[in-house]
Image (cartoon, rainbow, N blue to C red; front, side, top):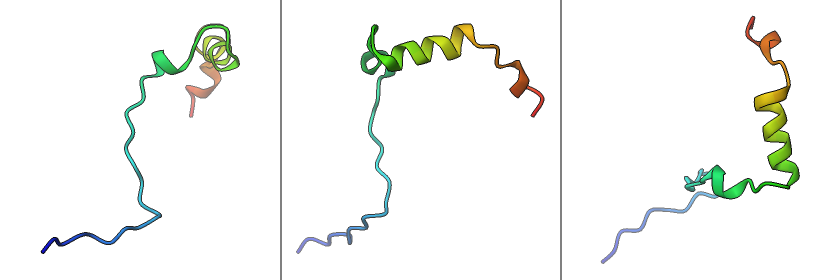
Length: 48
């Protein structure tokens, strides 16, 4: 007889995500990613 584990709705799931396939050029997400990585000076957060 199988011994199944009880299911818990609060448990997390690991889902493989490839961001290079998810964030497509021309979308808001791509633009936001580009601005944060290339245009905005984030050095103010280095002090923390």
